[in-house]
Amino acid sequence: MLPTLIICAYLIGSISAAIIVCKILNLPDPRTQGSNNPGATNVLRIGGKKAAAVVLLADGFKGAIPVLIAQFLGLELFELTLVALAAFLGHVYPIFFGFKGGKGVATFIGALLALNYLVGLSFALTWLFVAKVLKISSLSALVATLLTPLYFYLLTSDLNATYVIGVICIWIFFTHRSNIKRILSGEEGSIKS
Image (cartoon, rainbow, N blue to C red; front, side):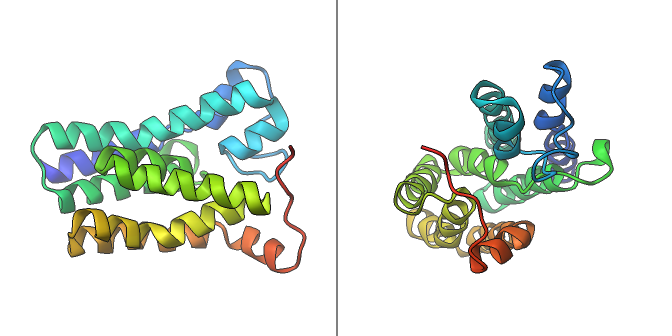
């Protein structure tokens, strides 16, 4: 059952909300505008708050739905984190869009909320606090990501599942490598008030 759920999670993760929403709203393809990233932040730049909110929610549900289905079927936490990883990888490397996807943060948050809502909430609150203080979206995501394995282990006490969460977090740093370069050089854009 687990292999089937992992494949399904990857396929669900591969549905790019940013590309689909932009197509429906007659907006430019997010892979060709702004940061060229098919994610909510880039859709915010090219299509505004409503379009970005739809993308953010859809990307979150891509992470949550496979985990909730697996939970309903009685899988253990470690197996649930593998399902979450598959959904995340689907978002980052979508089979339907030439394996060129987004950075995975919204899908990860959705999965975290389904795995343990307190961990997901801790991520979101950390993001909001850092964003309020430093006003840089990517840095907020990276700080929250860095702390998530700690939150996860403290709230679940499951070391094996925490390792999988750690792998996702390392991957998020990899997907944000261009952002990290811009942060270090002082060129990363700030959140508009």
